[in-house]
Amino acid sequence: MQTNHSNGCGCTSRRGFIGFSFGAVAAVGGLFALGAMKKTWDPLPSVRAAGFTTVDLSPLKDGEFSQVEWRKKPIFIVKKSADMKPNDNRDIVIGDGRYMVVIGLCTHLGCIPSWNAANKQFKCACHGGEFDDSGLNTFGPPPRPLDIPPFRIDGTKLVLGETGPEYEKLMAKA
Ligand code: FES
Image 1: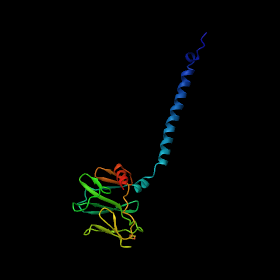
Image 2 (image 1 turned 45 degrees about the vertical axis):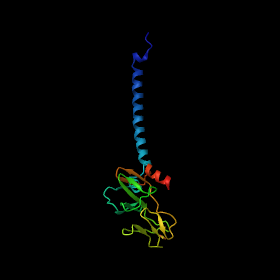
Image 3 (image 1 turned 90 degrees about the vertical axis):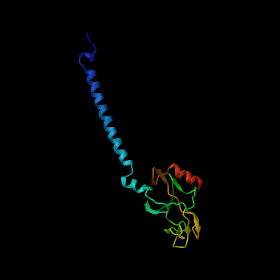
Image 4 (image 1 turned 135 degrees about the vertical axis):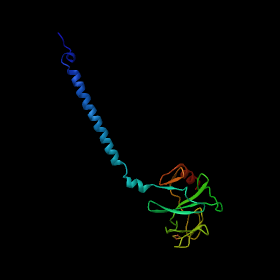
C-alpha cells in the first residue's frame, strides 16, 4: 500500500508552491514598506538644498571678492592675490589658488562688514571693527576672527555645510 502522499496526491509540492508564493509576496511587500519608510526618514529635497551650498571657485580672479549665501548667512570669499599675506591656518588651498572663506557676520554683534578692495580689509560700520584679508580681527571691538564655515572641497568646488578633511585640518590649527 502506498503511504507517501507527496507522490500520490501532489499535496507536498502544492503546499510548497503556495508557501513559496506567500513568502515572495511578503518579501516584495516588505521591500516596498522599507522604501516608503526610507522616504519618510530622508530629509526633503528642499531641506537638503537649504543645508548645502556648492560654489565653483575657478572663475574667481586674483584679489576678487565674492559673496554667496549659505543657510541665510552671507559667506565672503576672496581669492588671494600675490600681494596678500598667506595664512596657512585659515586659507583654503585648491590647486594654485588660495582662498579666504568666512561667514560674513561680525564677531562683535553680528553686523555684516563690507569689503574694501583698496585696503584689502573688511570694515564693520556698526562699531568700527576691522578684519584683514584672512578674516583676522585687527581693530575695534570684535573679540575674534570671522568664523570659517564647514566645507568640503570637491575639485574646484566648495561644498558649504559639509565637513571635509581640509576643514578638519584648519580647525585643528585654529
Ligand atoms: Fe561689528 Fe560691533 S557689530 S563692530
